[in-house]
Image (tube, rainbow, N blue to C red; front, side, top):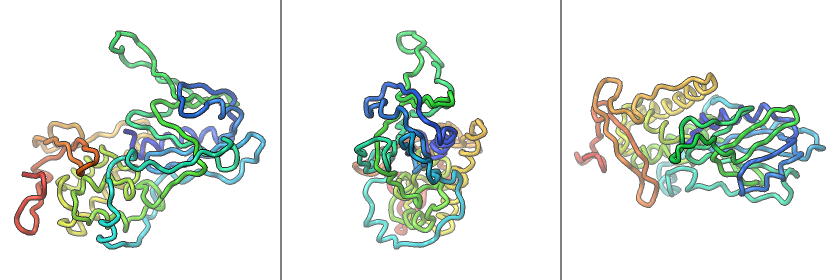
Length: 319
């Protein structure tokens, strides 16, 4: 699934066309009527976690204030809440599918307050001024190019192509930038309180209420960088370890975004590896809360040792 850094790059691709009018549309999606987008002007783009929101207005409307947001993480917000409050608010810690944003379709797409919400699922993407081409033959042996869900051709001659994503009209982008790890308004104190809760940290890191945009790849990598076993309960870790884990989450996300903007790959140290950088054998398991998604997790038992509870027992699942 595209994580926060990927969606931020998608935002930058879309931002090239802000202020331009949609001249022609196409695509296979049936979630929206693509013809509704014709002759609308793209007013701006915003990101919340793993969701991209595109603002559209009628072509005759003035462009108005910018609806874009900063791409990079700035000063982290402070503030605290008690671990008890965090525990009481706990529901599911998993991906955006369990936390669908509540959007209501406006009566008139392109009227005041019309936003198109784009969620990229497991393999979604956006391309600017190019189409995706088949990299291998399908099961039938055909070299068939991927089918776009939506194509927006702009008056300038440029175009945006959306693949493998879900779209719906929204009256506004329901977003909480304080939970977005790549937002200047990210609430560091609230994230730390969530990590202190008595549950495995690998569950908490995927809770989009506190770590919006943080996905399974980032989770695996930062737990290795911080030398923390994925099933360690946050309540057993000292504050300095939690601070370091949060620093790793922010820095890794920023580094990943920068590499994407330079069209460079990022070298993973533990994700889908058989050995860690020190040559130790890597273990793999599927972890998740009861009733929630189970996600593949890679860890090094030597670099990320299990943490014992206060009664001398290992944390759950580490036997």
